[in-house]
Image: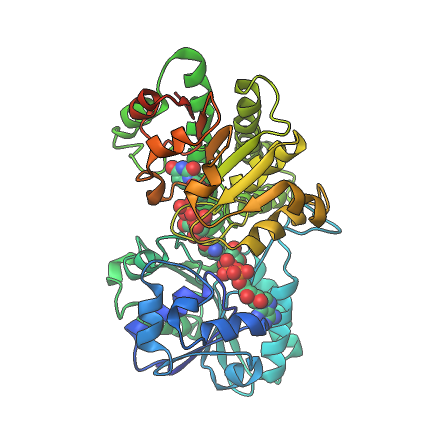
Length: 464
Ligand code: NAD
Ligand code: UDX
């Protein structure tokens, strides 16, 4: 079966970039990305491509090339579903905030809404692709809804989890380590559907990098991959605390350990804690699934990765207070970086949110600078915590447009995102304009200790 029309429900951090790359690599396939968020779609359609809602290196160029040719963004979900041979579901699946599984399970209400809408609109057979990260066995629920509420047409459900990381999304999509496609390998229709999706990716991904599995393996592989990655960060972060007590340097330890080819060098960078919309959510979901099967030891094992991460964020903030003579009340603290990692404007679960909240509880005055995150987003993140009112947050926090302004007259600086530009700042000038002693806390191991100490900073870096 040859796919001519693709619809993707959800124009977010995954749907947008993934479909842009598919449209670029498959110019004969029409790709329509739909969303119920009108504002988001309007931004994707902004004539100025620099104003698309997601910042990712290289993305605006692809949108410029494909938009209006075979890439479309629309709020007309129904007609896009109607036209499509293949429908990707790429909606959000956040941690549930209510009811059974609150704080752990994935909230599948948007997934179910999509399934019901597809079923009610579809007038011919469709392939439905799970692109969102979902609990293992969700495909069975989707099939049930589609088959029982539809118009008698047939649906094939595939699982095709996305492994892109934000900040490198375009490169990850163009050169993926692997593409994973799970489907009904026991039926001819299932195999045909899988082949149809394989042939889309095969336009640019070497065939040997496209894995096909049964649908449950595919669903579970995504949660497993994120759990393994997050575990590496928590493992090195656990060591960073021990390094600080013993005089070992976590970067030297990571290098020595990572040179063992069985371990590998990547993803061993100690930090103030991992953030992002995926790691915590997916591990909590994994823990919930394990518990629901009565696998308490499995659940406890993975939960420790989250506990360690929460500890790391708290310990970083507590250390700032301790070093500054046990009080930051009324002291001005500059936060450099709000995004959860560099090269993205995404702030979901960013460590900066939690460190700032801790400092505000200690009555610090916080000034924030981030090159890509808006003021509105920063206040929305703080307000979402519910620790204090919007008014109080706005009284205690200022957002500025330059790092020099953020650091002016401050007692301390905390580097919380590893933006490249922070390496190149005029640190001598910054030091001159700060109150003394001038504290510099590096939560990303971004800055060079020796030169900063020579300038006069009281320098602290994670794991050293
Ligand atoms: P997102 O919140 O950025 O985007 C989801 C979009 O779906 C939103 O714009 C929302 O308005 C839209 N939506 C929700 N319900 C809808 C409906 N019924 N009809 C139309 N639109 C609807 O989320 P995201 O970061 O793109 O993540 C999407 C999924 O991909 C999640 O399951 C996530 O776990 C997974 N994932 C994310 C990443 C990542 O780096 N962000 C990576 C891999 C996988
Ligand atoms: C992650 C997975 O990497 C990706 O495969 C999946 O599809 C979505 O979740 P993402 O969250 O976008 O991607 O970014 P990632 O590069 O994994 O970083 C996650 C967090 O871990 C960031 O806060 C990052 O700063 C932190 N991190 C990462 C570290 O602290 N140290 C590291 O060595 C690596």
